[in-house]
Image (cartoon, rainbow, N blue to C red):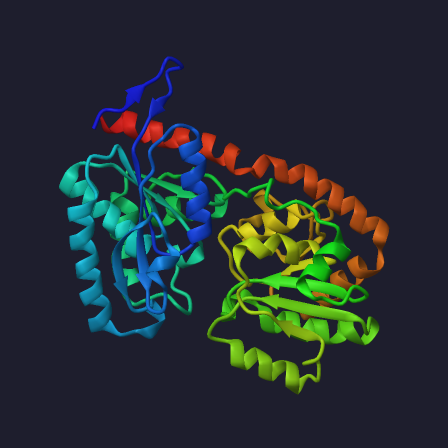
Length: 383
């Protein structure tokens, strides 16, 4: 398909986006590209327990067990159906934009070979480079194929870019995720707390993410145990769920902080601005990351941030400017930095102002303009 050109010489593209997770991120990307005049149909792969009705306007091209189930036959059967439906459904597009290596990346490469549509792979996180706890056995086998055969790869950090160059000999663009600065902006703290039914007099530390080993929530709970000894009205607000839920709840009981650690589960995306604005401090204790959108959302909400200094994040976040970096798994450093920010109001205000200014460069509109340029380059080179 040949793209049409407007009077401003900007190519209007039809971009097929394929995703398996990160619904909110992919929807933002699709909407931002649509705002720039492109047609962006969204194709989704759903996993066990996900309600199809929760994804209006998306074409469901696959449904099969979660990779963590390790059920090879069920996964492969579902995977075959997914590839078949993808081949029948996606047609007449300029470029395919996929999120993560498996299953989306392999589907994109298949469409590229069958129909001549260039496929662009956007890395989601470190699971796309290495196998962690929930990565299915098939990923290792398909990763080299997807990485080497994709027309273009978009890494989130310079670390991912350098790894791809060294390991596979491929070059990639670097483009981190964006944030909706209109949705995520400071709300008066008391107002947000009253709306959520939170105590207006407590000090809230919030952390958001899946309860998986590499997210480091257990280290955060251990560090918080000492924080609450010094600040009795401190509360740890955990937004998320996952395989470690029972283990983490048991840990709070063993450490005798179950009354101070609040498990609120996954909260609707529409409620996230209220939860962030209701909090005093955001902590991201992961031991491995790609590029955490939730940190940008916390910045846009005006929160001070403590986060693990995992590889790649130093590209975008600066210690003692818009965050405090701590070594991964370092409970003592976590404790110390949390206490500093819970006690020093002047420092919090300085970090807040810098975060609100820095995050403007990550708005989804800025992201979409950069992504548009990458996609147009891919189309030009494929002619």
